Length: 188
Image 1 (cartoon, one colour):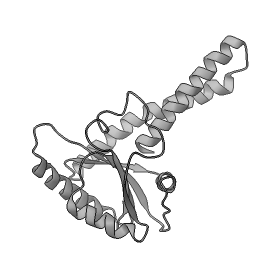
Image 2 (image 1 turned 180 degrees about the vertical axis):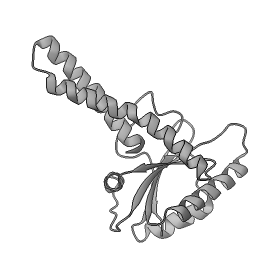
Image 3 (image 1 turned 30 degrees about the vertical axis):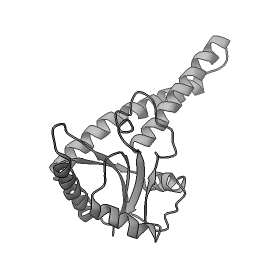
């Protein structure tokens, strides 16, 4: 479910845990809330090995600065729909794009590597949705592609984050420097 799914599970975990403790102190039956808390906690913890596995797999596939986290297509479509766009095309896969920015690399070189990785992803996964939320600039080729596809409802590039609120303490640096933007594109 990507980072938005992890954030949703974390919010659910902390809300359910609060309800569990409150219910327990008040003497209410809380077994169902306990199982809900346990399930949400396990889903949240399961995200980290999932992301590590995706990083290793992407390195083997030749990606240098991009990690593709596979998502359920219905979840990606839900996020897109809640951003004001509707996906009419059937897609085979969907991915959340994570951009890794190593220290000490110059911006033109980083953009060149990012462009290469995104073109490799487009070639490797046709008929797929790629979602992102980042402050990193998109290479010009992909800005052009997104502009073209936005006319047919197969892409957008909007200011702000996805509709689900980010969970505090786990979302790193992505909205500290620069404008946070979200977007998607469906590859051909």
